Length: 324
Picture 1: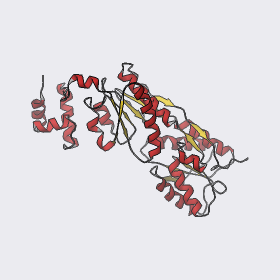
Picture 2: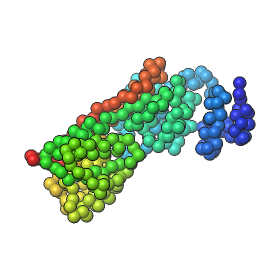
Picture 3: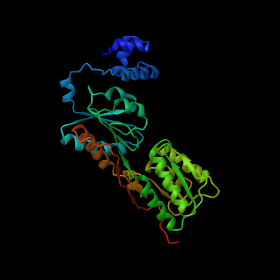
């Protein structure tokens, strides 16, 4: 059976470099790291960590990996995860993308729930295993031992936009979040498809790009306020950006919803305070269901089919619903 010296010889690196890679240290370049992983797969080498088999078997730590644009958003998901796993005797460890790679190992955690889109598929492919299941939120990916839990953004966005169109609105702007995220893509596609279904033209100049933070919504709102012919409705990909849009419009004495209607997405506590029309994605329940799916796979159920969660529209004062 191949050993660590064989891998080092074939990779043209030192034994210590191979050891650093296999033990999750970050002092090795990505190209060399991937080369070593590939050789391990070719030679059928299985790394045995320093921790004993008994320690790994008793490991009941679940890792949650998240980014941090919206603290309230993640707190609800974390509460859902915690409430399920604590009853099952598991613990939760929380990490950002920058620090998660070394923790996604059986000697430290027994499975992982990933929210951050910056966790690369390559890492999920390397770490996912029968004894290390992974649940990914808000991404559709097809990898072994990885289950996806996603919100049906499309249906709820279509419902909201159609109702607004039915009230007689025809001039729309769209404020998207980080463009590489599936949430932004799905929400925009639903918006665009609904306009097309109603034979309403949407111009590229009416698309604004944000980053899910309130400041980016504020900047977009200032740009909208400068337009000679402003939209009747601004559809925002999340609540934080919608809050920024509303703040910018109000500073220019543009009334919401009398002059422009604004919508968000996610139904945060901020949206409730502002009277913002939005879509509620059940974040506590999403965390709870993700934890349930992970624990089921840890305990032998082995189900990796995508689970889709329904969302619904919450109508509030930021949209003036009117007759045609």
